[in-house]
Image 1 (spheres, rainbow, N blue to C red):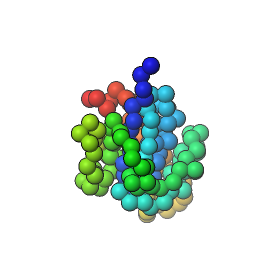
Image 2 (image 1 turned 180 degrees about the vertical axis):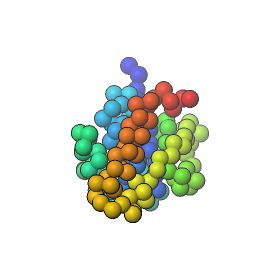
Image 3 (image 1 turned 135 degrees about the horizontal axis):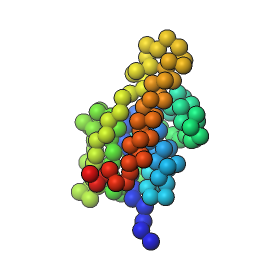
Length: 144
């Protein structure tokens, strides 16, 4: 039996995009991929991200915002940076770990001037759906 590949989704604060990616990956590709997420720093779990995920039947409310060190000694086959800052400040990983950048817009930044809660959530939904489409391309797209 083949083992699942291990993928870390890395973002700046592990509050939104990387959390959504981890939740989507576990839900949609858990049979193929052992997913985790972390941040360069921790910003807490974003409640709008939790809500956007709940709308599609995925509960990430129990997730915690964590830094890479919080994961303990662990090897990853792939690290996917989901924001520019994480890509620019990505820590060193062993040579066997392939680091890939797949950036997504920052929903909190997009929603900062939203005139309503619904308008703010629309940004989270769009980015969630873009992340979902990326997750559905895994693991094949990791080798591309």
